[in-house]
Length: 136
Ligand SMILES: [Zn+2]
Ligand SMILES: [Zn+2]
Image (cartoon, rainbow, N blue to C red; front, side):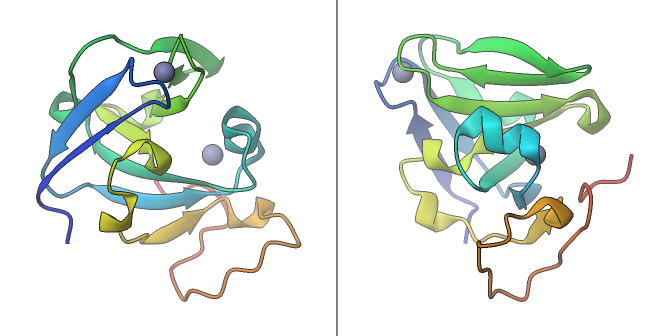
């Protein structure tokens, strides 16, 4: 289970974080914006209330990838780290690869499954949302 404290950071260790408690979401995103931003065929995010995330040292760099959408990355090594969306106010989505213990999180659902790459086989029986998994 996920309730414990998790630590993580970027590839170079400049940005480090700690978070505790059960996440609100563990969700795959197949959208093209995440694909390009993360350089990966599919992204997996762990969502928490933003105030739960404690940064230990440096803050990541932030840019607006779409109106109301903020993505963060390490300014030194470029690791994609966070996703925030005004439509999901108060939440921050942490890229799963940032965690020191990514195996601790069980994916719960797929968002933007309509954009999944055709050669990517996914055999789980998790809920598959054609668009965003969250109401807008
Ligand atoms: Zn870094
Ligand atoms: Zn996405």
